[in-house]
Image 1: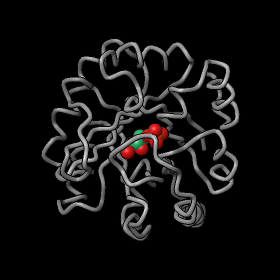
Image 2: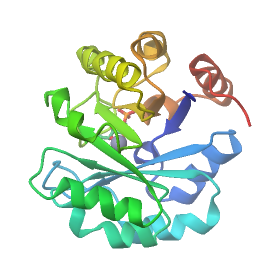
Image 3: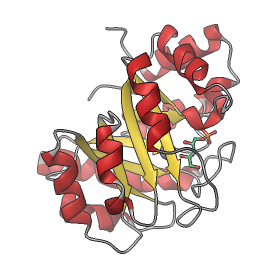
Image 4: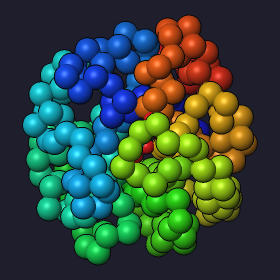
Length: 220
Ligand code: DX5
Ligand code: ZN
């Protein structure tokens, strides 16, 4: 599976997101992780679909959009129209998950499912054959700069095992508190996509390049 370092714009400069986005692009990264929050599912707000739409023309990066919303199904149209390439929705809130995934796929986008640190990995199982990405949150979502919860890697190992045994090809993503010091244990567990906000934006260009190299992200 390809290995990707996906910086989270949540840790960028919210007064100048375009420059925080450009940093990622000029750094040679391929993905940007966009964290959307509604103040209900998570106790914070970040930005909205108009922000994503306005950033889209300025960037060739793959927009990995993470909807931390109580009802992401009610907001799919604006995020699809904004130019997302992949939309990830959480399994904890009550709504028609399958219908939401179908809508994302029908729009030609990649689909992602996410669970929080204390949500059982079994919630993913009915969807493994159809989903493009499984996001295992390694912090309780809402804020950047928290500490990495290593116990979540047990769920990654379970997903990786099932992927192998059942012949699926979804990517496994971790998000929250991820830094260079976690790369080895994450790779060994089966992680493909490393979302990094704080650890990425506080690093200098050399440290960022080393972070990407340690993950095995190939420059295309
Ligand atoms: C939910 C967000 C954050 C962010 C990463 O809180 O999803 O996890 O992407 O933030 P850092 O890497 O700063 O923990
Ligand atoms: Zn995220």
